[in-house]
Length: 543
Image 1 (cartoon, rainbow, N blue to C red):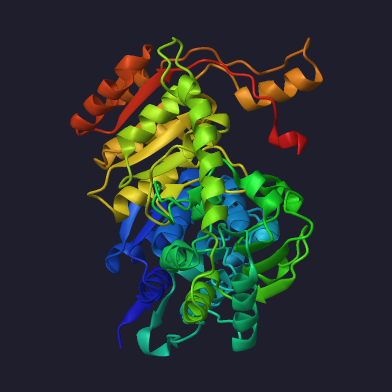
Image 2: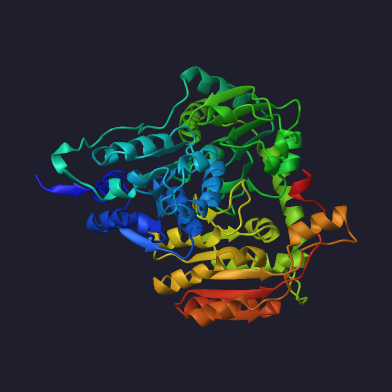
């Protein structure tokens, strides 16, 4: 029987997992791994910074429901990836970070980039280990995948010494694992489903709230359930896009009011964290049904009257079937009340959204950008205040196709997320909405887009400041602002200089034309838009 090297074993095991693309920044400690991917026909996408490779792996997982994979070299390659691992950890996204490691014979001898990586990454992974035996590499991949898809899901880490990667073993000496992890969504028991359905039947002011624990590949059950119930629905984080943007029951400006008046809240994969007021905005008299695949999320910060450990998408199917048999509850008056508030609050922002003032008001920027991308694009949002303003108006209407940074609040996610999206959906318009601060993190990945001929379209809301942070400084030390200003910078010229399309916009009336020209160029493009600095009355830091 012919021999096979460790890198090829890893690649073949990942191919069994359904992986067809990996993201990497090359390095000496992973050469056999990369060779294995080539031999097994797995696409290799190389980037300019390991953080981007790992962000791309996370987005691959979010968009497909399969295991996203990044491969990085030892030492600095791993440390450069930790921010992205943390983002995936807090978002609950299955992904694998593969890393090189020094030779076994160099252990504790000061080999090049020698480091005990698993100890370093263990706080932000579900599992972290080292593969010590070439013949067991497929088993190590299976172990990692099993942990990655446990509960809500999360990142895992496996480093492989260079000699373990390069060693040859007979193919017949390898035990190739099969059926090694759960492949069915977790259901709730019939009694729990029946009890929840009865609560829904009695409720007069129910609210449906879906968060990142409702995975995109299982979110298809949300719309029929909401329409069966007829109740208002709100979306948070990675759940955005799970309902059509213009659906009559979808709200995004009246959530606090709806919570305050609700008599029942059905929370699907929701974190009661700073983004949701720690659950304190919900009416104290309301019943809360909390459904999550992650047991530790149940009852966190807000008591759950019914706490259900189950896949939220599967629970929706079960509950929808039971609720349909009961008939629809009459909540039309309640839903109409929320729609009226939504319409009124949208109208309040329309003056700014149609203003011709220059510099452009952020609401005008958000409105025009949202209209340009429309409902069928995939959009990564990368920034602070610009994300808060723009995400509220984006029209993305496919589960998972609005790629936000998640609860860790990471900047620099956009290029990696967009890279994965364009690889998976080459015929779709893929965009990135940047804050000017966020662009500085991984904006040079436009070189990656250009090298790989990926026409991704970025647009920067450029107010020349760290606006969210400046707000915080002003609230506490108004006379001593420190490191809050960036100034107006020609980011578009960098993209044009690399061989892409770049343009700068000052006048609001010209933004749409610039966006259309960027798309028509057929090149990776960046439209740099001068917007007004705005003082926000509140900050996440103060919550």
